[in-house]
Image (cartoon, rainbow, N blue to C red; front, side):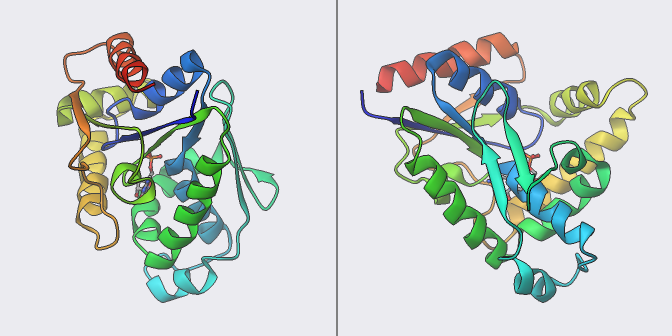
Length: 221
Ligand code: C5P
C-alpha cells in the first residue's frame, strides 16, 4: 500500500493528541506531535534567556536548537540538543509563551521543513497533528481532519489532564487566549483547510472520535 498521510488540526482540548496517537497505533502508522516541536523551541528560548516579546531576537536564533522527534505513537519522544524535554515542555510557563514564539515566521519555516522531512521519511505513512498541517505543512495529505469542541468541553478536558485542584475557569481563559493568538497570527494561523472533514467532538467519547477517524482513513487506503 502507498504510505497514507493524515493531517489532524484543531484548537487545544479537542482530543487531537489522544486521537492521533490511537489512530496511528491502530493502523501501524508513525505519529508526529507538531505542538511538541513548537513547545520544544519555546523551551530552548526560555532556557537561553531569549526575550519572548522580541520577535527579531527569536528569529535570529531560530535555527540554533536541534530538535528531534521520535514518531512511535506508543512512546513519542522529543529532544532538544540531546536533552529529553518531554516533561519541561508541558509546564505552564512554556504553554503561556508558545503562541508568541510560534508566530515568528523564521520559527515556522524552520519547523515546517523539519515536519515535511519527517512525513516524507515515514515508510508506512503518518498521522501529523497540529494547527496548520492541512493548510500549510502537508496540503496534499490524503485525509485532513479538523477537530472542534465547545470551549466548555475543551476546558473541562484540559483541566482533567492537569489534575485535581485545577481552576477550570482559569484554564478556560488561558485556552481561549492561546487559540485566539494562534488563529489571528499572520503566518499559517490555526484554520480549517477547505477540504478538511470537520468533526465536532463535544458530544462524542474519545473512542467514538477514534473510530470515526479510523473509518475515514480506511476509506482513503
Ligand atoms: O498542540 P499544543 O497545545 O501542544 O500546541 C502548542 C502550541 O504550538 C499552539 O498553541 C501553537 O501556538 C503552536 N503550534 C503551531 N502550529 C502547529 C502546532 C502547534 O503554531 N502546527
